[in-house]
Amino acid sequence: MTEKKSFLESIAETGKPESFAEEKFEYIHNGGKTKKLLTLGIVVILLIAAAFAITALTGRVSVPDLAGMSLEDTYLWAQKNRITLAVKNEYSFAVPEKTILAQDVLPGRNIKKNTILPVIVSLGPDPEEVIAFPDLKAMTLGEVEAWISEHKLTGVRVETTYSDVVAENQVISYSLTDGTEELFKRKNRVTITVSRGSAALSETVIVADFANLKAAAVLQWGAENGVTITLAEAFDQYISAGTVVSQSIKKGTEIKRTDRITVVISKGKPVTVPNFTAMLKDEASAWAKASNITLTILDRYTDSHQPGKIYDQSKAAGQTIAEGETIRLYYSLGRVEVQSFIGKTKLEILKWQQDVNARGANISLAFAEAYGEKGTAGTIISQSIRSDLVNTGTMIAVVISKGMRLVTPDFSGMNKEQVELLSKQIGLKVLYDFQHSEEVERGIVIDQSIPKDTLITDADTITVILSL
Image 1 (cartoon, rainbow, N blue to C red):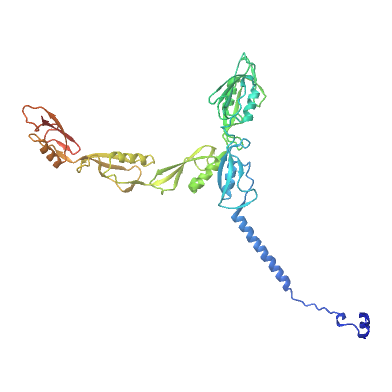
Image 2: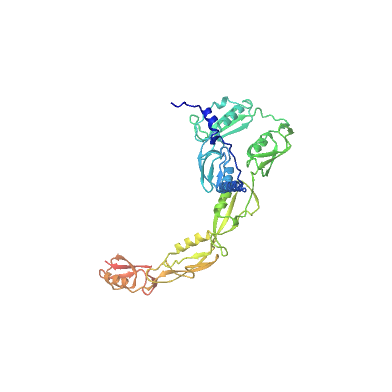
């Protein structure tokens, strides 16, 4: 039996195995090829990233948080980014009128340009909402104002008057213009009269704070306090039109009632009128909507402008106007097209004249009469211009038919059958009447309403009298 040797003993006898031999490593230089490939890869990645970035910047837009933004500012953002707004209106007590309530796309999301973005816009408080009607006669002026403010009432008007009976700032009376106390709605109108106390006036008065008041309220204060108020107007970027911008004497100042106060009323934001001749109709409408300006489009006939082109505007380009004003834009209809009215009535051509002249055609008509064909009486048989384009101010000569020219025959001695035959042959309208006669036998003509050999037309009617 062979004696089994250990691993170490085997090594001692035979020496180290090949696997224990010293290993040698050789460095092979590749001439920078790896570095070049790495650099090329980074460049490719950067180009791809840039392409994606350019595509994202030019073809998509990030939607901001529109909630709380005014509808005007939202339209400006949408127009700038080529987004079409789909507006849905809802009443909201908390959010002011013409303010964005919600949006269909979450803020921060990207959407494609030239797409539609639905938004919900506040109409303000619901005018149909029923409001609890308080005991007004038990309230003070401050409580009335708080009630109005709390419920955002739009139809409540407060008046003040002197009273020797009712204490100052207490309600004297009230009257409802519409609605009832049991079913009082936000929109319903009510006038509340509050006492100013005794009518005795001192020589001086404390100037009120006119901020946020309308012109009518300022003038009312002046009338009630015997102070002359002079109103002036000025544009203001932030104060809405019709509201006080400033007052010449500060609030709380004691003045004589003979003093004058100048109060400046806002004309609203200044709006600069653009040159509409460089705009398309859609662009002009978008500008008007964003600027709170009313556009009136008027089509007018012109001799020197192509149809569909704008040729004038009521407010000059560069002029400053207030929000809410109206600008009229005049678009050319070109020259006036005159159609043929042959066979039609005078009334029809007069109606056409009225229609085109309402749009600046200034067409005049000269009428004449002449004999025409059978059955043409009252219709147009000639017009100097037809089926053609003419300049504004053109006169058109029109001839109306008097009917076919006829000469009345002599019906004496004829019977009814003979009268009918002859009148049919010549196109004459005949009516019959009957009278007793001792000289003319029954059924024979006694007389005729138009004497023989009279010049008439087929539009005329002759009455023939037959004997009974």
